[in-house]
Amino acid sequence: MKWDKETFRITGRGRVNTIALTIFAIGLAASVVALLVDRAHFYHAWLVGFMFWFTLAAGGLFFVMMNHLVGATWSVVLRRTAEGVMAVLPYMIIALIPIIPGIHELYHWSHADVIAHDESLQGKTAFLNIPFFVIRIVVYFAVWTILTRILYETSLRQDDGHTEQLGSRFRRVSAPGMILYAFTLTFAAFDWLMSLDAHWYSTIFGAYIFAGGVVAMLAFLPLVSMLLRRRSVMTDMITVEHYHDMGKLLFAFVIFWAYMAFSQYFLIWYGNIPEETEWFMRRWTGSWKAVSLILVFGNFVIPFFILITRGAKRRLAMLGVFAVWLLFMHWVDLYWVVMPSLYPDGAHLSWIDLAPITAIGGAFIARFWHKFSAHPTITKGDPKLELSKRLINY
Figure 1: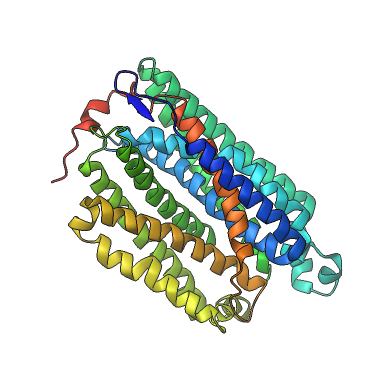
Figure 2: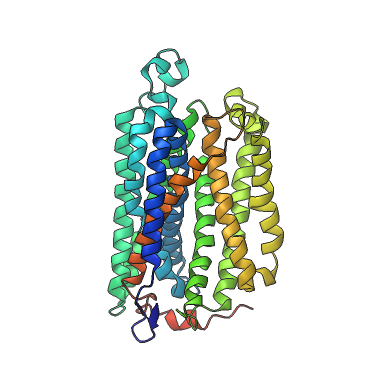
């Protein structure tokens, strides 16, 4: 892999695509076997794997829109990487398709005989029914695809020369886009995760899933930058100062995730409504109690006390370790959300859990790398690029 400092393009893309597609093929083959071995576990594991990579891509869209809205300078050298993550989002609908045949395995509200004997579910059938469920999927992805396409294509046009019209277009799209993003991501979280237990409800659940996805994105971003740095790509542009800022933002959203998680728990505990407390009681049963404690300490307490230090954000090895750790904890978080609906008495880890996340992950990385390496790795037409390169943290 080589990087042309004049064109900011990668020449000779290396073996990233080959490795990623090999991982995808192995994961897909394992997923087929898993489907034949245990359908229920496979569909739940596929949902966990899908949500892991989907929330990461959705976090990329948020990162890009947020930086356009606030007019950020520090992140300009990183934005093309984030745009590459964002650009994978429309393709995630392909990874969601296998969920459709597994609706009956995942969602008890999809069974007519269950609804017939459940007064609570009968009151929700106008929203929780298969045709409308599929229609909402199409609507969500239509919104995300339009936002992603406009922002990505405008960014590529800016490479040929910045104009005030292009800069204004970023803001005009991102402002309403952020509102649409909030609504669609929230309802997608309700549909795909919260409705696994259609008797339970939490108005803060969408924000909780959003927070986890942004943490994953902010962990993924420095890891990609570090891997590129090892190949001498953008080493003079993405400096320790940028890693420091990535670490600060990662630290902030670790706290935000914890705030959302605690707020959700505290309000439900305080309200003491049986339909609400049952969801948390299930996650305090058997070995789920250990998983719950792992989340508390692994996804907040330990990262908080490490990332709060200046040194942890500026030492690339330490930042990289915690980025990998937080990505793993994001998977644990989603596993903790999904799997108790199948195994209420305790966690059942299996090789089946690895197959879907490997298959989807291989395809995700291959698509990301194709998008990222096909164009300049820096938004070279951005008027703030030189200021971003000279970033200094005081």
